[in-house]
Image 1 (cartoon, rainbow, N blue to C red):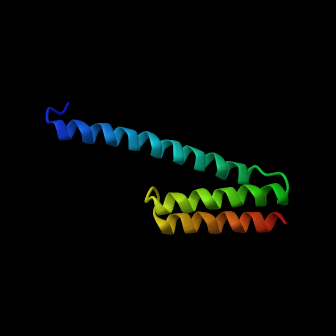
Image 2: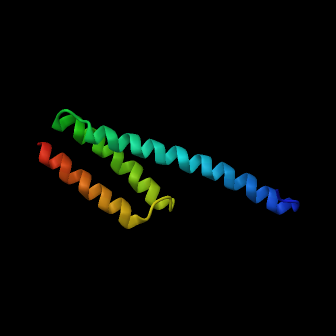
Length: 84
């Protein structure tokens, strides 16, 4: 446990950021599952648009590497296109 005031603050802030990042990752995983579980092309397309926004947001906030998000979007786009 930190004794210095600034170390206590860093610990508090990192805990808050950790909770926020975990929530964003969870939301993203759920959105990706919705694309995979889509029954028709239209619902897959709608779910994909939502995933695209979430992935771009995760990349800009440095939660995920930009190339990882690009790869995920590419794979999901191929999947959605194959459904049509």
